[in-house]
Length: 128
Image 1: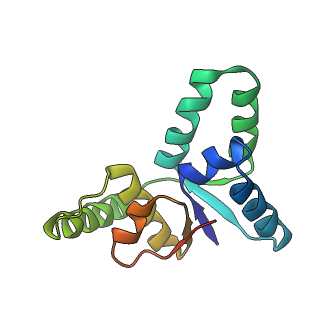
Image 2: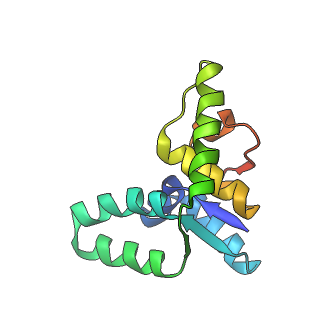
């Protein structure tokens, strides 16, 4: 199972070759794809700002994904991870922390090119 970060969705929507190839690979393997609600919001903000065809495509992509809610437990785990990162002097943004905690909760691999995920303890990340 893969947990999509907004960077993957943005890259896929923009037709970036690495993201397109990875999407085809995962589809061919029948992989289950999910996105935490905060990452979905982050992805769709730009689509709504642009509107038109890009918005339609983004909403179509979103409709094909399982959307994970952020529970109290996931939020607390994200805060704990953020505290660990801050203590080490490598702070990470709240949305990335929520994505990482949701992926950990669901036993999923984070799919992203965002290097912040490599600084979050216990997060399994795959790039494209």
